[in-house]
Image (cartoon, rainbow, N blue to C red; front, side, top):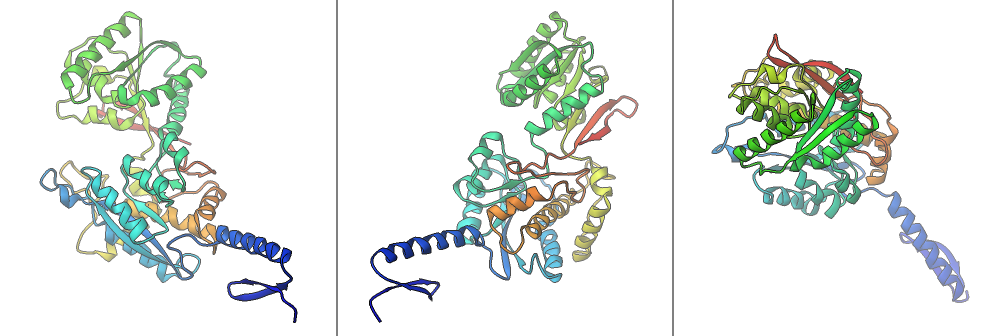
Length: 433
């Protein structure tokens, strides 16, 4: 035979060509084939019969000298659900192999160590669990590892190289939804609005103001409390100054953004102010912090107060049949460690329901996405699978979630609360979206 060039792929002889032009064509062909194969191949941590995933959780034992909190047994919760999935054949024939990384919540070093352990030492496909805002960049920006359990800001999302998913709606989606609900409840009709926030809330304030302007509401004053959050006296004095300006401008309703949902009413109470505009808080958690404060709260300040958030109340989470079934499985795996009921819990009850609830929601989401991704599992197929599912539900989610391309927060339901003076509490009023 004459001289020729043999194209091979994976050791297999594909075609014998003449030199020199055919050698160049052949090299292009193989490069293209290799590129297509790589883009269509499985991601790190994915083998024909297994998927390695990382699971982080807060190591609360490290905080016992500071605060004694029991959130439940994370490893038992995740292991129980993973074992059940594996016993049923896994996900598309692949068994899940968990790699755990407990994280001391104090400081940033433990989270960074966990990220290195999971992404570099163990080369996992994805990471589920506990993430503080500063932790996410290591996974989705420095590395290329999908995460489930954190919402990214728009800036963080723009820099992400890997998909991210959360069961809690982000502020950028939450604020327009809740402002629309507040308007529907008549909260802005005929009112002169003042909008207040802290220095840390300015990004959310911009979203609030943009939405309110589009609604053509009557905004007469805006203010930012720039006093250090560590200086309570200075914060209180700044709120007093803002309140004086709002009152002089005829503000009848105050939209308190972010942390000011706690700071604004607390400052009015501290100053024994007689100025009580209607309070509309953009963050249920911060207003609830004021209501729950041992120093007490003012019925006059809270009269007709409205607020909203993306976290469902305990009654919705716990009483969901899907969550009931999931919790029961975990309880059977550890029968001598009863999982407490958050609905009937007192302030001294151990919060050991937290770990099971988180595991139930995150494993449900991960399983749905991976099953929909099919046999080839990588970042691209995972992201495409998430967007292809349309509206889905998760245990205890309180509504439907949807993950269109480029959005990982699920754009889930919003829970609206109104002040109930008879029960002296913020009471769920409606659920939307």
